Length: 365
Image 1: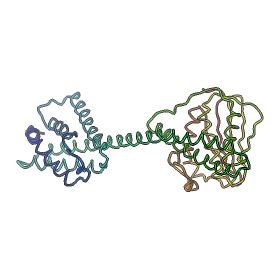
Image 2 (image 1 turned 135 degrees about the vertical axis):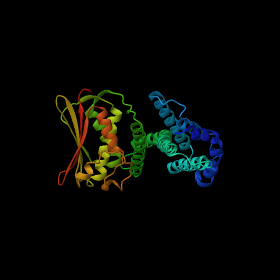
Image 3 (image 1 turned 45 degrees about the horizontal axis):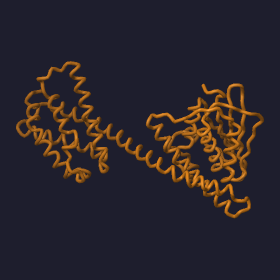
Image 4 (image 1 turned 180 degrees about the vertical axis):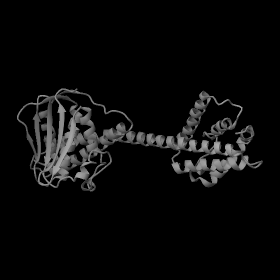
């Protein structure tokens, strides 16, 4: 390490940036759409940091080393954050910018004399770390931008969908059973419900991916009545296929809205993947400490290897690939159940059909 390399870098920083920007303009496709690559990014700050790293005038105390590492990481992340804000930039182009910078630094600094081995190692190590920091922040910022876009879009879609949904429900309730329009209205309501569910699933998945918890408000809940309400609504769209089995009142503390979503999701899945025209049975049971709901359908069983990924987000079994959806329904059903301190499990075997079992505590722990 020598002051000569540090001084040369300091004296030639502006030249390095000029040469680098020209090469970036010529070789990085996304850069052609930007007015300036230098004035609004962090590379000049990075060069100043590298000047200090090459200098032996600075006493390298443990505190100084830590401070330099923190500042270096901050600068790398700043560059990654800025580049993620440009719609045309990809992470590969971000990395290529640093590769060009390394080439230009060596080109300019070695015009007078070759750099020492230690100086070259410092520069290479510093750029490698900067690339890692910038790439990590680029990915995180891009993910945040995408999440914000998705949340904003899905949120804005909810209001018009709710208007259509309420209007269709009102129309369906006013039609007589024998009316030829009942089937059309029922299909419309089913499609609206699927769309609404998909949008809500995206919103909730975004919150969970961001490390946020689901917004759940608890209240005393008549569980049997809740299940019967869900079945009554689903019967409009899917016909009289649902059978509720219960022999007593069951009460717990839950979020009616969220548990309703879980039941609807499992019941609709039973319709989708069960044998056509066979009943979907919803059986309610209780012990002293918990209540359970088993939703059962006849048909082909779920393979053991598919059961292992069933509750993972954005994962779908082979049999589900032709169905509409994001692959989020079961993931969110499990997340909601667990937020109630409950469990959600599946049992599926040849000749026995498939059962999803929801267990909830009678009193929220």
